[in-house]
Image (cartoon, rainbow, N blue to C red; front, side, top):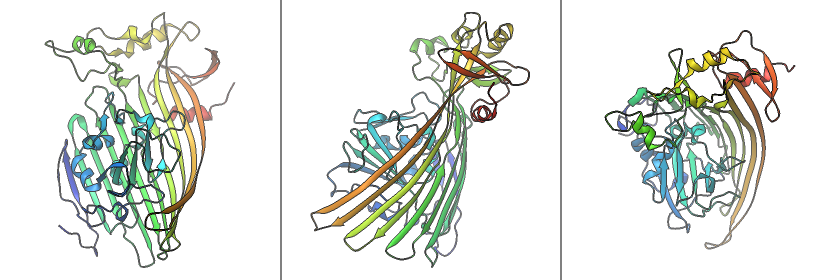
Length: 459
């Protein structure tokens, strides 16, 4: 069904598990079968491999395929049907997926959003939980296997994954979606595009929420996604596109190195318990995980495409990203016992109430079991500019600049597993002076603690 371009259109989609039943707009700008990727997405400085023109093994996944296939899978899993690509859920926590190309792991794969690199500046890793909402705003994904066509200094020996988000000048219309799945999975979203005005202005925005549990036990999660794009094209020579997107999330994790003997031990009738998660238990009757990941990494960019002439073009993007968050785990011992000693022999779950009792009977000087929260935040600024001139049909001249500034902020935040009177700070020495933040067990670990740490005075 064609959407009338003169009137807004609202769409309702219901997704049941991985099977989808939907009534969707088939606008020519995104759900088209055209092979020209530049017509439907925000490309900017991205180095796009063109079919049968660029000598690179390449596959492109369009928005229509993403809508039809993704369901409640995680974003990287849409690439599992791509040659030489293998994506796995890893431990099974929300956004903990990993992807490999031609046998190379993510450290040797360049992941880019609209031509901007997103691999971690310290170790080259990619944390897909930071980009869990990317599937909502993606118009196309291009996978270049092996050394790709990018001119940037990136670790792409395994390949390059370029994710292209929707541009602001999509045709006028809107969409409302609601999806349900197994294990309490629920997702809802709303998006609207204004279309391009006579003066060249256009905008697009999206809001979504995803929550529930994954297949593994004790993997509760909640994530949000927001996206805003503003475009301005005053004439045929200049095109400006501003985008701002982020996906704050918090999820319980599961270690992926669980032995088969443990799955059999906590299974039944001689069958392994494939849902078994060794990293959680109950505290005061509520789900409580030892490993919680929480992060928010918004990214904003301003693209300027300047068509100087038929043969010359300048593409520039200025971008910034601010990552805030971290992950939790255990540290220390109480009464000579590490956390593993408090595992229930029947269920294999942690007995957090027993940990609380042991800590109450002890004191920080005699030993405590601590849940540490390692906060790894950063500020990332960058500029990419590329000038391209077509000399002949067979020769192009290209020159550009790729500059980045990265500042990391690391905080070791430690929290105790028991209820104390008013919050106070203690100083102790493990290998170096470390700040201990003692808090009530009802408080949330993570962002609230990180914020509290910055506000508390030092003694």
